[in-house]
Length: 450
Image (cartoon, rainbow, N blue to C red):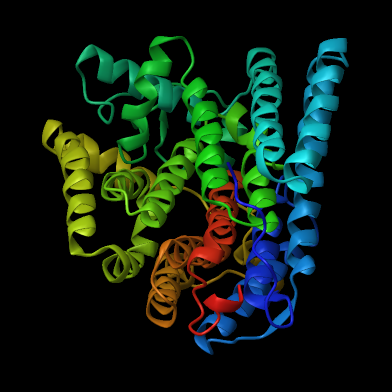
């Protein structure tokens, strides 16, 4: 059962940083499609990131009415529920069952956030069930044409047949014009993408059972629901409960699920790590190892491990290193050349995407062609941000999630590609920080007032 909201102390305020982090999460989860002018959205994102980092660097203890943070999260939740309902109604042409589930979802979300105790628990369970049913309908009825699908399914088929998922080729779903826009030079030969599964292997392994059942996305849906449950069991106040619901029902969840992106599995790994740190559970190291063995942009938030060391000890980090090393190492040994070809070479040849929610397309239009160093500096910037958060915050699950979210946000804002799935993971990481905040306010000296 979720505890009742803690009594207010002092001025009854909440930390400004928590509200700003919630605002940054909401910004990320609203990045459904690029908007114009190109520099507007990424500039807003950069302002939010810089604001958070300034408060972290100065260890600001500024406070305000805690209801401000709650309303920020509730606004995101309203957007999320509206998007989920609208998409499902469109897909099913407004069937009576979809309408009924939509009404149930709206009412249950309101009770989950507004009530307390067992009523809130029950309402949250209804939210999960209603959203799952709506999502199942969307997954069954919506067809998507995206390169992630053949790359993921081809990798899964290869693994099950005893071949390296990194040493395959898959059908190209795009036209010649689309291939020139979306894929790098030399990526397509005779109608096939000549690269295999392009990410690190942890999500691939987790997707195998669902793939055997017919669709890897069932695991992605289960991962989102599982992450929501972990966040809910961790939340101790109304803002945390609202953020837990938003983690499941947000404007990007259904889009990311439909498109076969693997970020939902990563969100579950991160949520399990945060929950484990709060509870002192040994699952933390395993979850972190799988999280770092999921995608290459993990290099940006490596310094976050220092937070884990200070909070949970070296044993947790060594466990994570062992788990991640074994998972990745097994596939490297399986076929080293294919692994490098698909995990590294594939991404190096990816084109500069003008449809990215990133600062670079707008800057390129404004000042002309950008230097090569600017196109490759993003991971270093993210690394610096992660290090700053690790050094200037109180260690704990909040600092860990905050470091992951802010480092990835800065990385993506300065990358040649920045898409919906990236922002989904960033928004989820920041929401997890909002959820765990009362356990270990990351700004020293404010925990007792949280």
